[in-house]
Image (tube, rainbow, N blue to C red; front, side, top):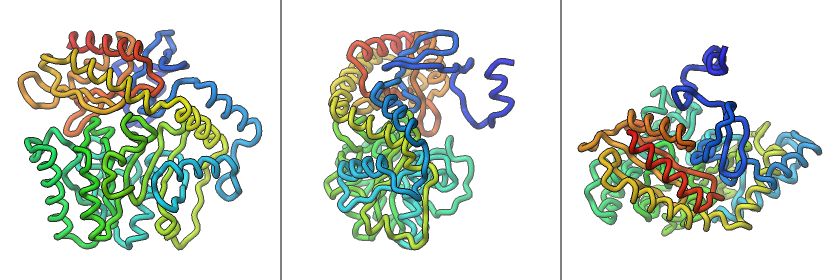
Length: 425
């Protein structure tokens, strides 16, 4: 039996695999990975934006090995120096006053915890979410996911209401100017809140990840915050994909919407561990301490993952990877726009920093083209490039999110491979 046959025999059908002939990645270095057949690929997806810095980054692997040689696990029932040190740094970077940090093992679990805090603090199970959003695969996270492809059930522990604003280029307000777009979305939010009971929170990704790297005009969530504050509704910023400088312009995605201050709750995961399993929640003490029962995390805040996070965060800050994302990402976006200009299958190249989406359509229409997206994924892989895909009504957006150490030469190489893949389609 092949490894793929063995996978299908024991892994659920809904655990998706990329490619007609799925590949087994065996090792990586820098921005490259190798498969079991010895093929080398330039990695423009980083394990779904998780290998944020580089594969086999010596500083991280050394920290993991040294901590594993001391103690691997203790749980949050004991004092944990690496966890406290990382919490101190994340709290200081978050922009949230009097911040407390709780570590989890994933972004899903982080968002689940944020929902627990918000609903307990506000004593309401009503949550506002964005259309086209994705917040994880747990029962509660699925219930606030506004993307049909990733929401397998309508059953929910929450009452979820969806508002406009996450997608700038499609929908009833797409034709408006940025200013008018924000006004229309705010009016929609005001109207919605006038018809509901008291909501606990609005949860939003500053840049929608699985939704195809879509985002509203800068300032939308600041305008939302003004309305939410009047109603006492909390703002949860899901920074699982946008955090740690990936967008280049900002360290956190919410900072593009900071006109009315930081969010009430911030969630993070993915890139901070550079592949190690770390998620977390940041909130002011008043919100974080609102729970009236004990709680722990068996694996959240593991000494090994915390050591990895500390080493990775130190490397990211000392080497100004946010600045590199801004510079190299800006060049890559412009290069992709140049090579796709006049290409009928490409509707839009969008994004900021090293978080870039290329939306594909049926030529001559605005109709999503998931078949073309799958074909480009295959052709790019054949050319030695790994990319992702996503999107709203259909999975028709190429998702490009390389490690933040990407070089200009690698950006050019990846763009050339993608250009050839698009020509084949």
